[in-house]
Length: 632
Image (tube, rainbow, N blue to C red; front, side):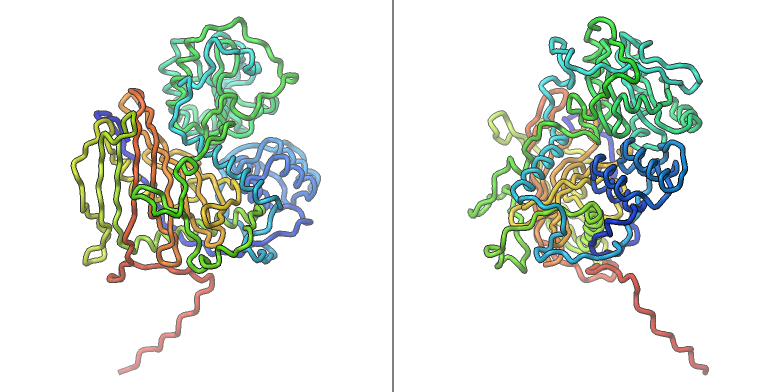
């Protein structure tokens, strides 16, 4: 949403239609054989820690030989340098080969193979996994959920720049280790030569999509602040300088770029790329963002604040080889795609009124009911099994639920329904000071074409907010969030836990876009996936990216969407709520948004609409032979 008279930038959500993947049963692999390439990929995507990965690699070994392409792929899947080193050692132990592992090109998204041996799940229907008490598991998962949702908070920090104030204790901040690396022209690039300047130090690679998306913004920052004592420095982790030189010319990079080495990687504690640091005039690290920032413009206030700070003496020299590595986490809770807030905040769902036996009001969220077939037995059911699935099973769950989401999307496109969209501006006392409302009937014409008919649209009385085309697109497509197997390559999913949500038990995943492509909107937040039906039953997050430019601002509230079973098969969105403050540069605006999806009815009149109720068979029956035409 924009403030009135602000210029808006259009964004379009695109969906591609791919062939549906077949489902395979969850299972367990043998634990005594060497790891395959797929095993390593599944462990990385499943969120296994570096320490666990290294232990498994050392214990079981690998059945493949490492090469630069594999190292690039595993890096892109989240492998740290330590994990790559362990894989390289295991490869050398197996084949007698030598040579360092290299980092490089973007990864593919291979479909995991069917497990070699299936293991029957316990009676509860949960996949086997680590054992822990339900209370402890629920608490740990809720903390992870709160930390993930804290990244989508609209509230600014007390200090809007996100940097320590000048009177704060700068001695508590880490010192940026000095280094000397060869630049792309063969000369030495010494960090010490930039003493007294504010430095944005960017560790990146040409094969990293999020890295590429940030660089035009860094070029712009260099142009705007170079005369004020600001300098961008790029450090590429590519194996060869040749593609980096080509990339520099293509993107017209106006700042120096050096080639990284193993010592500097270890010195800066690189856990992933991009990693971006803001170094003050005093040589201390004031901000560290691991992963792509949601908006490069967020660096503006931080840079301006650092340029206003005086240098407190000479930069402390830290020699390569004997200096402690910087911590992998951002010292100031940076909000990049790889960073997490260290102070979990309650989610919007936790802040909302809990469901009760009383009838909910018109703007109250529904409780997520249990399955229709088992509701009568819910009272006598034993305590739920909230054990965590294995990394291999987590990846299989992701495949299954996104494929079912594809089926649901096709099915929902064959339903008519009524949608009520309401946005309210609230004053300081919580009273409604302005309102926007539109109601739509989603119908089909006589030819089976899907149409949207506005049935109610009173006068828009919003005084400060302006409903933008991007907001209308979000009403239609993003807030009733559906994550299909088609869109899966665009998102990074991370397993957070196995929890009880209202009357159901669900697997919880964080969802964030891998790369923010110009002209597109994405969802960032958390989804709850029913562990029985493997469908999304709840989602909480916001639309990204938000835009803050000299032309205007377009901001979005954090919302929660609930689903209910409508046809006994699929979970349909029925309710979305947001109650948030949008922090525009002119001041915060408190708003509330409620969307209701009602009166779902299946459309059956046209052959152009196909309702998919089950997955296509992997081995379709052969067609009956056609009899040859009779001769006249």
